[in-house]
Length: 423
Image (cartoon, rainbow, N blue to C red; front, side):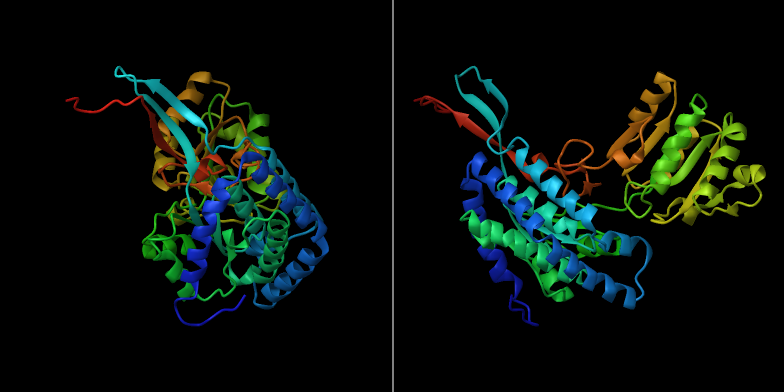
């Protein structure tokens, strides 16, 4: 794709995508299902090419000093390619939300008032690393009847290009206009700025990445934005918790994949259970090479623990680092989460149903887990097939965004000639 240094590069692409969105919306359910299935087949067929492109991205990233969570998010292997293919096939089979009547009532004057789901239109997806987002976002947007503009980071450019080439081939094979899927291949920031100003063309922007990217998009966008902000996720171990259950949630939430947004970052433990639970928990965390930073009560049980600051309690570490605090009540735990949390995912371990319900009702995060790992706040795990991200913005979508979140409801009113003011 030809790129230009001057502004005006994005607008023609966006206009073409907006026009193509009408063709996508006009497809019936079977055609969109077939399209996404063909995309899955294309990714599978091009596995070797995509992995080769990803190897180039990884080599450049390592040479640039990239490591840790960013490198993990960038990396593709056979298992992750298989995950992309499986996600697309699951998306293809999901019920089509377009045209779904979510509410219907007949008014006293005989008007039938319906609320019907329709596509959003043109969605701009702005993201870092994570080349799987190229496939997931494209499949979700197209399946929901939308067109999409993808602006990935320079660190994943070769991977994104290879994936987009596969998806475009599937679109050609299905006689669907390729303009409905745009990959901005020039990562210059001026092009992202141009994209964020297209209020007459772009219906929604979704940024997904680090805190810096989210803030930049939110501060510069004139188009509507749904933020997928950082995950400062908490596990609260209640006084009535099963210690072994709580330990499983802790180890899975913190260590299974520490560089993702649904990983645990803070452990809160009720003071009644702390003397028996925390020593075992700290030993298990040490066995997983987790660095712990704790408050005074935690350090009184294990002086080797580093001192935790307010910055630690507010941090999304995305690494094998955990902040720990002992609290005297659930109310204190809730107050801590309200102060330091990011409205992403909170977990309670408890055998007390009343405590669980209070925890759920008291917090407004996008997902609240009762005796289940924070790692389940994921579109695939929650039955969405895949997700375009996890919204922490309270607009029409909150939490993992799947197909339904990429549509909106409009009114359809059916009558037999009724008028507002007869005569």
